[in-house]
Image (cartoon, rainbow, N blue to C red; front, side, top):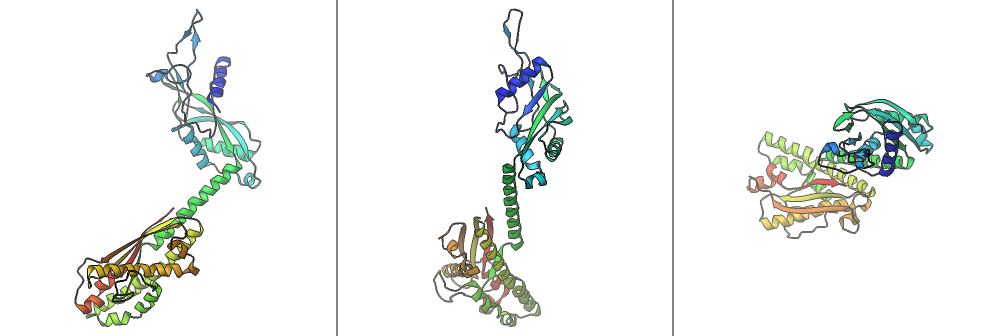
Length: 366
């Protein structure tokens, strides 16, 4: 409803019946909280809607007070958002692709509450009218009308539009939000992914930063060395810790890699954009530069697996031929810790074994 039309209607009501009624459009894009007539001043009591009267000589007298209209906190846009969020489109009418409009009248009282809520213009469908009443009855406290800065009761009418095309859009947005929430929960359930490697693999004793090996090949070769690693442990406690490391972390990392790869395929099929960090680490047995090259090869082995998994679906995304996947590589090199550099413990020790890893984290979906 345009301001000029609303102003004219309100003037008519004031002059003819002295019955104050304010009309609201549902979603007219206007964020104004008040209607104005006459000059504004710095005094809030002179800002708002005011009647201009004439004195005995026919001269207009400047208003000395003004009336503000009741409104939603945040204006019409806030009211529109509330209605769209709160509305439950009647299923029967939704299935029949029916639209309608109901006008509900309520008294906005000086204490900000609503009373005397009723339908004054029916949509022609009881389900729409009932839902419109429910929405208005659920309104939070409104900002009341004021006259000369004093709050007062005032009738207001709220137009509730049930538009099937807008309902389709609401359903689409809700579905996208639910899908995004489900994806976020899935990522959280997978968590950061840590993958472990045998010493100096892949491609031992080279300074290349690329490899044609893929992680699952390396994993299969590494996991069978569990007994060998346990034999190198000097105490029963150390043997148990190595066994737990293989059972929980080495094997578990492989499972999480499979899950995140399937997740990436699903996200790409839904035209999502996914980004993640993939960082490579090594134990500090070799020189720093060598360890960075080794870390880079470990990163490539994981990406090689992703390229081949799920029928090669992710390959064009990882290679940059298709958009939607951003991968940030960080070949950090050796982990700075207290690893025992004794050859036996530096290769087979648990601390060193935990140093040789890839970490996939900071997974973001939009």
